[in-house]
Length: 398
Image (cartoon, rainbow, N blue to C red):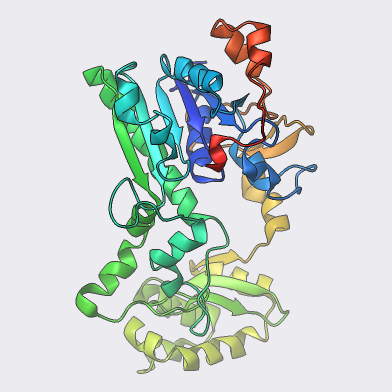
């Protein structure tokens, strides 16, 4: 079965989340991804935790389908091996410390002279220029800079996302930009340079609150798990202590909610609640009334009424319930992938395509593919052995 990126070779000087998330998706589509790692310790994300059979949860998620080439590219011979690999590669992805790749001669300008078809994607916190260019950038710091914390959390306490949302956003835009660059190269025959900024990726995702606060208007308030401007929309406790998430979008749904869920049709025309703006302004009073009615019902009864009324709702699941989610089971979304510590379950990438199946191959051990990759480049066993580092340092720590 032919996959979209079969025959494409991606070399990645990557660590943490943003670049590995980008390249794993390319690999899922068939690309050969060669991950350059520190000899010995590898990508520092390997050490984030030991939750998956003694392996890192982040690393297991982000690095299936890849080959690991352990090189200390501060060594001239190791850097020569990397440059030899890039001479015939299609894509280079890197999210090293600001300026590290360029200092090693791995900028797009330096590399295109040897491989004009090469696509180079640089992922950084703030981009290749500007006053913030050299600032260190971690996910939480970018969430903060992008204003994400100002609209997330409770009125009393700003909160970060529970996942690495800034890294994921940057990885997604790197992935889509690389796909676009491959399409463009198919027309022009030439590679290109892609400069992806975590701040700009999050800035795009923040456009709703940006426009909400247009020309100095008040920004959306922090409302916990409730919607900032639509009510009722959010979590509500039932009488059995469980929580139901529900959301109304229009006046027709509000009327049905009052009549069929609350069994209090008069509330629909109550002047305090007869428009979304009034419901939002009087949300505490309305919340008290909804909770009073729900207190006599179990969560299952509330969900049944919501379903009968055609009101959108969801369970507030934890990770255990997501692992066992019946919809994921029914759609056959789980596979297994090999890791150095045995097989683990893994979700298929989003999007079912009738023309091909995604790759779901192994997560590599550090340097697992050194011999195969370098031997294919013409290196002898003795030359490969000589690449072992004299120190544990590598460019990924630069």
